[in-house]
Length: 292
Length: 164
Image (cartoon, rainbow over all chains, first blue to last red; front, side, top):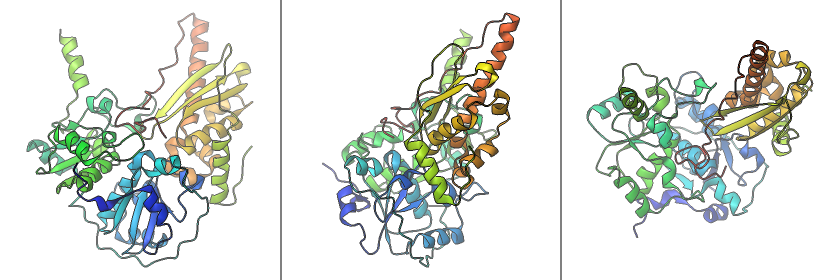
């Protein structure tokens, strides 16, 4: 049985419990539900909110260097700290925070396998106590938007050059059947479907029901069967780049693919762009039915 | 009912109280009761409002659904706020005013979650008013729209294994 390409980035719940309070180790909770941390968190963990803390409040972008330095410093995070991320929904938001810290070049990042769900299921300790963080003086170089992040023009080039794209959304979103809910048009995009040439591999196929990641062999089979191989330049996308950060983590760290980027503009950008190509199997099927 | 908050911690305690011990969660049946569902596909929140509009007021209301802490707490608090109030007051209630009631400092970052129940409640009141007119004109009544797709257990959705 093959092992993960970078097994050191994945730690188990028992390991985390054994290392609570260890010098140089910070546990960071990142959830979709922003009040889960307050209902109980791993003792000593700090919280980060992807929306209010990691993203710029005005531009659709991530924080700049100064803001990120201030954020990390305020949470007591030092440059050489090892960060263990965990969160709800199979670590979907934990991998998003992990990806964002990597944008700013933080070296030592880990994910707790199984996330919050597994920790809670195992009845491990939770606390509502929040210890004040001793402020640090965190320094980073400028955000690196080129190694692990993709922008729309790069994605468009990917389409024209027939390079691999992974659409990690649900099959309904991929097929164009699902765009948004009635009365909530602001949630979606103006067009449904997917980026031409993308293969559909829902992000959650990389997880087991207990929230842990599947084995290296299972993951290899999953992605290779759809033509996503390590020799290729891969871009993953979803709706706003959060689910695809999960797939980015799996391909980059668990399978060791050297060239994987996350298109954080994702469908909420592509589905609103004027003039870009879109594949919509549901619309095509309807059109064929109407023509008969 | 309006609550004044001393600080962020007080807002969080207020929201957690309504999330963990909701008083208005459950079904509501009866002649004249209308039902309206809404959902946020991004985070998998789904709420259904049950409204008894007897006497052109919120005679009774409950909610059911699943979702994040803010969406569920907001539904419970909203029903406390509107109980007994005229339906016109419901329509006049703005997202801004609800955000103030819930605790702006915490919920403003999750506006869609915070206003999910309010939007469903307003939709229920509006559809009920349209149906009153249709009834007076002898026209067929408008049925409730289908509930948002349940993404529980959908691969790639927000809750692929049905475990929140």
